[in-house]
Image 1: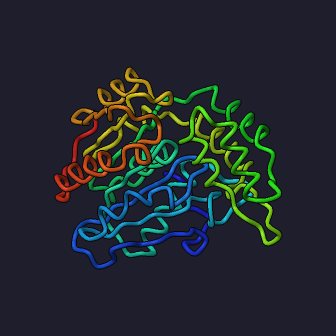
Image 2 (image 1 turned 45 degrees about the vertical axis):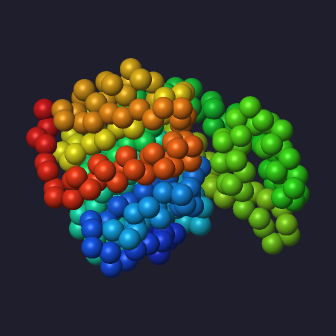
Length: 279
């Protein structure tokens, strides 16, 4: 069982939409370097039927950025503290990429809170290349930018072949009082997130999940292979696997309508909690 999180709920930027709606709440966890607004095209599809929680996870966006403490357990304990603060007992949990691995940790440690779990393009196996990738990325982007227009031109030029990723990275810049733009996440915290994530047995976490599970993969994703997705589904008897045609890693951004409909259908069918015994 993870040790309690040192962050207080007030240290975690969050927004509840649809408070008072009748359904079981749904929580969305963004991926590495993301923030709550990444779900801006998704949460409006749900808030009339159920409360929706979006948040900036530790080290991201407007939330506290401690110098250390970026393991999956740290992130999961933050979510638990936030749910207790809100008085929420049972939730549907949706996690993208790194947020999916946090969701797996939460399911393994605090599974009694979950009515269902959705993993969006989130692998269970650690990828050794990710540490080099994040370090190279942070070195390649010349922050701080002097102004917004300079930053915009940089990402348009450098990510011309992948405008979705370029737009995602550009959205992760924060404007300071003097007009300069810097990352809105804690760079060293992102490195530690990957380092600590490599030490976690993702498949072991997955096998311990007891709630209904949906694994969603983007057909063109380079982050989650079809073989790994199928292996993840096989590791959790009763798990469902869906592939979104034409989508890459950012399914919620590239195929928002299809992704929303897929999640809505799944969680609506599991508003009454169903437990699956671990193998």
